[in-house]
Image (tube, rainbow, N blue to C red; front, side, top):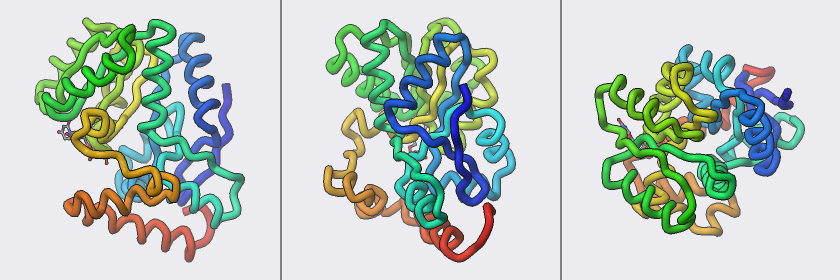
Length: 243
Ligand code: UDP
């Protein structure tokens, strides 16, 4: 199945809304294709401009590139591209776990601090008592082979990796071939949100697309990373062409 895509500063993003993303993943995985979902946002686009490995993963390895950041949607508007639907990573994670609970697919949560991933699994179990959690693994285990063998033993259908970016994308790219999963997705700080460690921005901030501002106020340590946002917008506004 071929997805339509546009390019923002040279990097591809697929034109799918949430419903299309979920149905695409369902049909691809049931046809035996291994899917690699990657959430695109301005920060990742900026990183990929300087990180060839991340750039290659985005171009060649990921099979579904969702527009996670409102900056990506805005950039598309500024450049006069076809509308880019926003599909947040947290939102797609929630849709996929709900779908898994419904159709009996199993999931594996890998990443975040031990108490966070444990709590995230509990929250999911409370939400979907019938959900099969094939395993969990915190994100501070240095022995990659050990983590891989745990996932191989657990044989989950969906693997969610929360190591932050670009570590999670690189981890998935290195290991996906030998993992018996149908789908792998990098989910950043999603387990922290689920565990109630980091609150998701309030509704108004989500609605207006300013979750980044909320996070900036709540976690000033992210300020340096956020400098990439104005740089991204500047490039979108004042440079021409794709790059
Ligand atoms: N993390 C991890 N192992 C590491 C570094 C980070 O498991 O070696 C986890 C961290 O605990 C957090 C997530 O990765 O749960 C990164 O969250 P962040 O919000 O920074 O993700 P991003 O903004 O990159 O999507």
